[in-house]
Image (cartoon, rainbow, N blue to C red; front, side, top):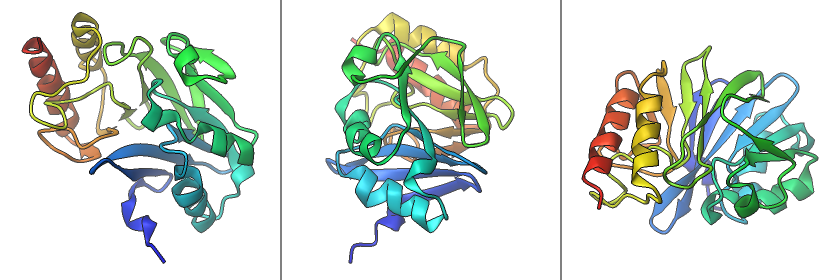
Length: 220
């Protein structure tokens, strides 16, 4: 039997990051557990719910129906392909920024910058960070100074200098916006350089955002 829990990183007692293998790297899926509910940020591949999300929740003593909210950070396939499978097992609402809602599809609630969502027992504020896509978002837990970024913060890229940006100026403006936030822990959805890790702490989040801004300045 394949041990998939090796791909799960515990960030805090109520916060886990699944590193779904994808084309030789990983795509991040964040699970936030609470007293009476569970929140999911991005759902990975079609198989991710059955192979990772639901087994992890079972191990933590939660049921599928505990999932109340699924947030998609943007509309790219490797972050939303698990939506349908997870929705079928739960009554969770799927939410995304209004500018990426059509790409995500079947969205129950459209978000704007500054909106808040409850995931588990944590409140996250939506930070609109366009650049990668028009509706890319980060989720900022101001109380715990935790930021979930999806693909909004790409550092130097998975491969050196290989950024996936639709709008350079929007991306740079988004990085400047993030530099104003208090962040002690940052979760990214791919192994971006220079750190090539999913969870950054201490001074690393700020360094990663600065590296992202520098790389974007050189982006053609």
